[in-house]
Image (cartoon, rainbow, N blue to C red; front, side):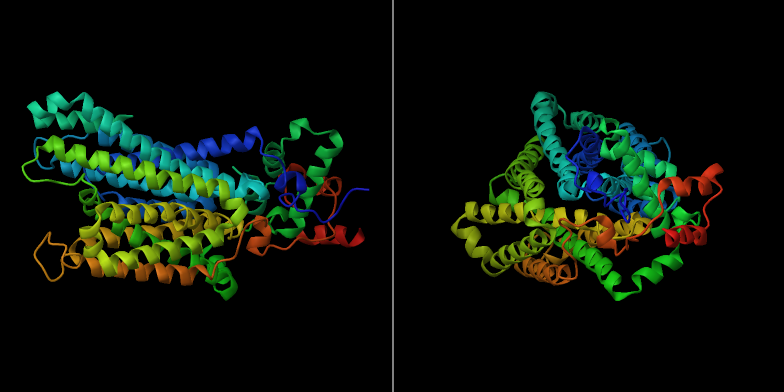
Length: 508
């Protein structure tokens, strides 16, 4: 006798399956987007720092909503087109004969590049999450996000290599730096188909692909189809009444504290994280100077760029990239919430130490200062920088998942924008420009932000080992009609009346 009351995405075949080539392809496809995102952000920041964050915020909000309205696959394709076109635009940007100069043209293309990068956040996270198995979902999403580290590292390596290649030309004529940066720059899911669109057939097709049904027996394939039928009982959408993403529904759902506190925890923790993350990175020249890679008097333009490029490479190789990949391999063992809480705590302690003893540390040992900074970078990525991306892709209902993830990500980018426009001024309070007179106070503020991040992170649930339906509070009906019983009602895509489905269920 066939089993009843199964949810297709709670089905052992789907949520406990081995990592297959299908899942690896999902990681690679989504990961490629994040690889190029990080590369584009890092490499162009050598030319025009912090210029695309407004576009990123817009993209996160816009494509977060569109992902729930129009579907994941269609919007992911649009995001990729925007990224490609705007990247080419940045590489080919030049001044006009009348009016705008090259900086204005680059800024315009950087805005659109930011829109594409922002759209990639909710799309990549949710696509990977919805195709993942329960026991490897964290690993898969973390692997996608860790491609940022690879992109940052490649950008650092390529910059150093190109500077070496063009060293003679740059020293003869600084305008050859234009060649260097231009070369650098020029380099649908089953849950959505069933829960939101109400397309049972599309859900079956996607679920079979995710489960690797080509290797299953006819009996196992039939069981998958029967499991899909449960969605017709669980969800109005699968019963012909599409439960689309609406603002009214969004407010009703997150207006309940048990759901609203999760969204609040995701958004605030990401916001507080990016205040500190970008606050530190905007002042990275202090760190580079402490380890001997900062600006020096009477140095050439080449030496200035070279010192910064080499310093960034060291920081990326020692602190940033290892943190990403330690998260990837430990996230399923430790869990998301412990990693986030530990990261916030360690960073808060490190920044507090720097805030209290900044000058003593620098005077005593620049190497010690560098080590503390590297620890911060490591625990940013083996910590909240990773988990603030992972958790929002798991804890929200399908119909609001990309919207809520985009809103959380946009909150983080708002923190980055605030850091970009205020922190460089705050560090000079009480002294002349460039004096770093308030640098200790700045590190103290950042430490306090991390303490707040720790507190709001307690609002979040632990997602390890739980299905997306469990995390979203979506109930499973224990007694559901078989696929054969539903087929006559769904022929011709006429839709299924919800009352008819429940009548069939009662008869069973």
